[in-house]
Image 1 (cartoon, helix red, strand yellow):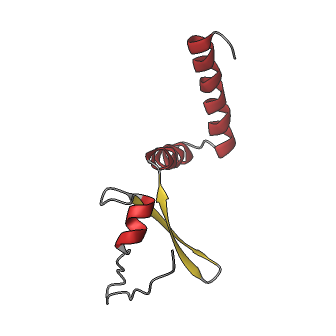
Image 2 (spheres, rainbow, N blue to C red):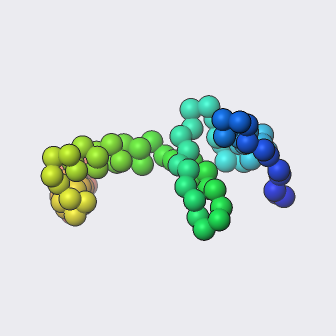
Length: 89
């Protein structure tokens, strides 16, 4: 697929070409992460799990937890689930 040219509106909005939306399965409900990578603007589809983890991380940060604390807790829960579901860690 070759690149297409788009221009931002006065409010900075751009339209993602239909072929790109179809290839990446972008719908009106799709959330996109927007960031700059060197001199490029990147729009990256984000999964609902990414959004959920960001919300959890923000809440944990407000309560004083670190990312390492969260990762330890997630690993403990994962091990408990594996034990319950499959009888092994």
